[in-house]
Image (tube, rainbow, N blue to C red; front, side, top):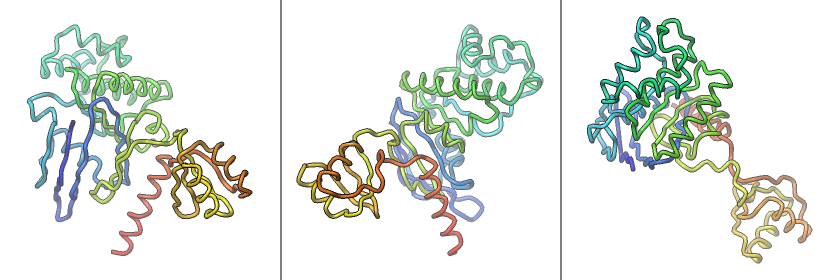
Length: 289
């Protein structure tokens, strides 16, 4: 397990990370989201060992054991005059991989047919595939991807989804930062939300939970009482009641006690809703300052 505890980093007179405490487990995929300038890229740089924090502790990171980290950060910047094979060979030598692994990786990322092409002639999507192939050489146990779906067409995004699933099944810890929240939501297990250099939320993604629902009724007190009598966990948040049962069962209980159901659906909010909530709060805090 990778753990960060009370990590802080200042830059240009202001905090870039503030009291960051978070844990990442092997074999899970984490989505790192937040507004621009929130500290996502800085956090990824700390995890990669590219930036050392001013304070706090880091435990379990591969580079602390002399092992490589697979990382793709932002713009894909590779020598445009080298071929695909030469680019992969250079990385292979750095991480101790053999020559056959280069051809295997090229086919894995869909570039087996263009090994002799120079990087400068590749499309943005193909360069992204190459960068990911470079990052995966040496079988890293931690893979960091910052906006990895840039330039990918729908087939490329589907490939990305499958590749991330393969890494998960191999026990690799994967952390993906992306503004394509709909696509990100399909591939991650947990979401980590960063705002103003702090982690404001870290939790499993529960969009499609079938064992919990949220309902809105015309008499919340009666539904809460009925749920308690039936042993159904229930909590109220604003005008919504969250129940530890399926939406169909919750509606059935409401009908049985004569309560009108105004809204019913699975519990959990989409990444878009979570992002909007955090970005709105950040904007309002900036206005207050």
